[in-house]
Amino acid sequence: MRFMIIVKADEATEAGVLPSTELLTAMGRYNAELVKAGVMLAADGLHPSSKGARVKFSKGKPKVIDGPFTEAKELIAGFWLFDVKSKEEAIEWVKRCPVDDTEIEIRQVFEAEDFGAALTPELKEQEQRLRVQAAAQR
Image (cartoon, rainbow, N blue to C red):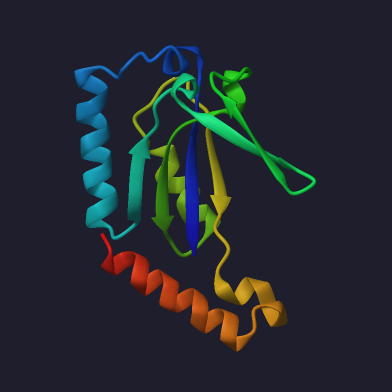
């Protein structure tokens, strides 16, 4: 089971305040544990929303909205992608995260089998081909 671990933004992350050397060191140790355990598939921090944009679709037409965005608590400052056996295991790993005064959200990633009959064999094969192609282009 894959889970996206979402680190919520706050006023500091939205102001572009970078983490301290101490926090970066602790996160490095934490990430090393995740990798050693075979849990971490990906992880990255995000720039503040002032450097971002949103594309809103209405009646099939896209509208670009430049950041910053309000409500920092609804924004994302970073993420991990975990591969674990259960939500409970994901929670246990997140509880070990070396942060303070931070909210972290855990969301399960859809797998092909979650889509049932709507994901036809042809669509599943197409999706797999695209994943292989995307990985080869890195």
